[in-house]
Length: 303
Image (tube, rainbow, N blue to C red; front, side, top):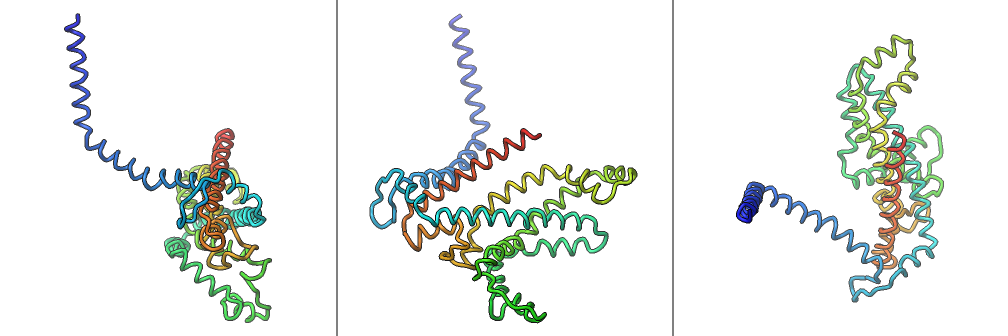
């Protein structure tokens, strides 16, 4: 009996050795991938959390301050201003950047001629580097010889201080972001639209459905999944807006300072305190993580 058990154990060891040898290359690739994730994703994440509890300026030795960075954040009036501006920007960006691409995709899907031309035209801004888009709009918004004021003056209307005025600064940033990212969302909607079976529209037409009824009862229900995914992605992306306010209005304008701009201020311009910036980054991470988890739970419950 003992001899049989010893033989079985040896057989299992031999099978395990063969399995390891057969998959050795796969294990090596997997280990390399895990190492890359650990080095470039997980380590910075953990390091950022540690920094949020330290006083760090990368000149003198860091030291532990506990929750002092978070207390300093909540006591800073600009902290609440930055969150308010970020939420306003996200809301406006969703109005323009979420619904407009859907409307354009539906329109492009209905076209019978020049489909390729209009699709390329809509997607072209996405191919421009973000900084180029911002510099382009910086010229458009120029209160002196900018394109927008030139057009307004040409039709007898007064010009505007687009990014300098508190009433137009935020909407000016939203327009830049919407124009730059419109093409990607439009193409995703368009791809989803073309996957809808044509029989559904034919049946709706036979039942006498109008365009609005076909849109409401066929198109939108069929696009529900992609719309939910894009909504989550756009909220996360717009909550992290940085380039537009940083380049167009700077880091000192309280009307357009956002969470990411405030993180930059804490780290590089005003405080030179990387611990404070890391604490703000951790708060943003927690807010976005909690929102994503709640959003996924609610959407799954609705299904």
